[in-house]
Amino acid sequence: MTRLTVLKVKNAGAGRHGDGEGLYLLVKPSGARSWILRLQRDGKRHDIGLGAVDLSGRSLSDVQASNSVPLLSRRLLTLQEAREKASELRRFARAGRDPFVERDRERRKVPTFEEATKTCHADLKAGWSKRQAETFLSSLERHAFPSLGRLAVDRVQASDIRDMLAPIWTEFADMSLKVRGRVSTVLNYAHSKGWRPTEAPGRSVTLGLPKRNAGANYAAMPFDQVATFVSLLNSKSDTVGRLALLFTILTAARSGEVRNARWSTVDLKSKLWRRPANLMKTRTEHVLTLSEPAMVILSRAAALHPPEENSLIFPSLKKTPLSDMTLSKILRDEKQPYTVHGFRSSFRDWAAEKKPDVPSDVAEAALAHLVSDKVIRAYKRTKFVDMRRALLEDWGTFVTKDSAMA
Image (cartoon, rainbow, N blue to C red):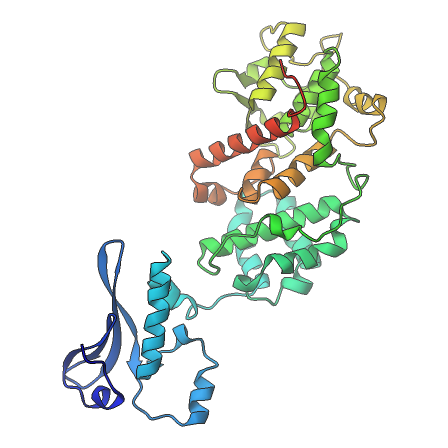
């Protein structure tokens, strides 16, 4: 096939004129000229409009000015520009990306991080409590907007998030985790809207940040020390308190949820723990998946106190719920400067550091933090539960790697 020239483009009659590699000049009977790219994708032929033909003979200064506009956004193209645009779209198609989406990406107005946050908040807040909706926005206004707010949401990189977190990473450890999770929610939402090509970055966000003081906020045990502590507990004789603490660590549950847990809420066959709304901080029923190590703890608890109808799993001597100090005392007796609640942060840090491919919303759901139905629908409800199960199973394996569980 003879390639086109500028003169041929100008003088071509009505019809389709090939330039090679799928690029065509389309001339209508009216004389209107445009560029078409024909390519194969998923075994099907597609014709993609590239833009109108530019026959203006632009000056050098005009060409230089047009170069400030991204190639895929240009709607008026010279022959050379049409070839370059076609080459770019063919490259995307070979990489498995949708050339239509890539062509239109730059044309679509991409909001700033601040604008995307406010849109995300408006869309998702119906599924949140009033306090959660308020703190979601206020925390990002305070900590994220100063550095990320004016960035186009598709330009926010792991390094930007890391630099934003640095001032609060060690001093306000718990808040830094919440802010990180909320930034991830915004970026994942932006991905679902087509505003950015990828979801939120994972482990790379925290690379380069200093190790946090374990005594900050809830005095969370560093996750890389949890397995040693679990092994220590497993090496001692079973008591209700030790088993309750182990179950708390393995499920990343709140102490009160474990101390008030009853056999009637556990489905041993499906390995599910259905926690009623009155036990939950969110006042919403929550189903937690149980890992194999967590099931072992339940078996050992049943050996200590055989289950009765609606009886407590971890009862005190008086058959009432354990005191919150019972679990804390175990930590103090072992000279551990941490809190029981801090194991939730240990789990969250582990998920962020060691499971970067797991969306942050899955880890948040495992902690029984409210996640909107829209997020759950985005991952499909069954898959969302399966992802939580896999995450907690991996956590159970991680913290019992030094233990002989039986």
